Amino acid sequence: MITTTQIEMALSHVNDPDLGRSLTELGMIENIKVDGKKVSFDLVLTTPACPMKKKMSDDCIAAIHEYVDREAEVDINLTSKPQPDPKEEFREEFKNVHNIIAVASGKGGVGKSTVAANLAVSLAKTGAKVALVDADIYGPSIPIMFNIEGEEVYGHKVGDKTYMLPIEKYGIKLMSVGFFVDAAKALAWRGPMASGALKQLLGETWWDEIDYMVVDMPPGTGDIQLTLAQTIPVTGAIIVSTPQQVALADVVRGVELFRNEAINVPVLGFVENMAYFTPAELPDHKYYIFGQGGCRKLAEEMNIPLLGEIPLVQSIAESGDLGKPAALFNPEKTQDPVRDAFDALAQNTIKEICKLNIR
Image (tube, rainbow, N blue to C red; front, side, top):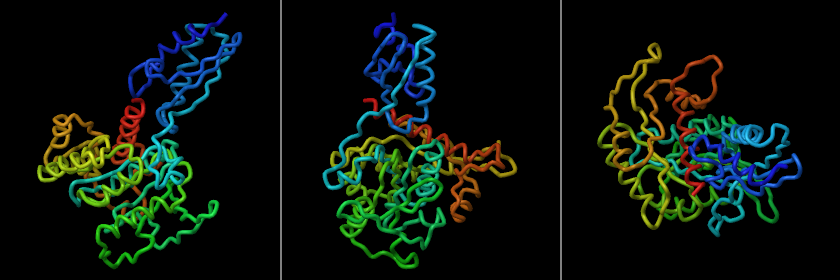
């Protein structure tokens, strides 16, 4: 006769691949039920879109067959932990948005929007439901990077309220102030106006179910960052930099911003963009034009993960201008260092989010 204790002992041999600890130790096994040879339980994921959920599920079944009974019929219910309550203002709109990632930079010109766009694409490639919000109110670039300039935004009525429907492309839900303003004209908005525009983008869009919402922030430390943190439950921030010392000095200020009591957002990690130059004809060569290891060293000093190193490659800029982010899958390229770098960034981001959600 199979017992609950036997199942618990068997599942103690199964580790979360990202966290390296057993599922039982992490509290990810709940509601074990045994009826003869029929076994059922809940596998509580750290995020609904966990890319390792099939592996963990298969490992659980294998462990029960190995340590308990090879004829056991195992039924696993995949569920997830409830996310922090949305802020009161947009409680209804964000109740099904599970993880919000702010992509920020201490200064402009480091490729923050490029990283945000390609991170969203790589996350979507894992099968997750992804949204990308262009919160760079003064310099929206997402419409260009996805070739959706001039797209018309439609309304969607829910109850007695009408919401904007995001534009969808490459499996990503997209929203930007660039859909509503003349790209050739500068926005002469004071802080409160820009913050109000961001709140409209976030709260008047119908997001529905989202596993990961990537928010492309404006550079620097100002009203938009404060508005975002006080409006929606940001899971964590990613800070983008280039290897030069002048850029790294701004990274420190960016970290301190998110650690400020008024914001209090965990920093998931750093991304070093333009980390090295790789010629197209020599994909295995790396030339450190702007210096080597600066961001990695700072990450070690501040005890913050380095999530990715993105190469300086002409195709990244070209793909953005063409509206086809470099992280998109290209079956003609079996080896693609740029695509692989963004995919690694997505996997490392998911891993850090899992660590946060398990606490």
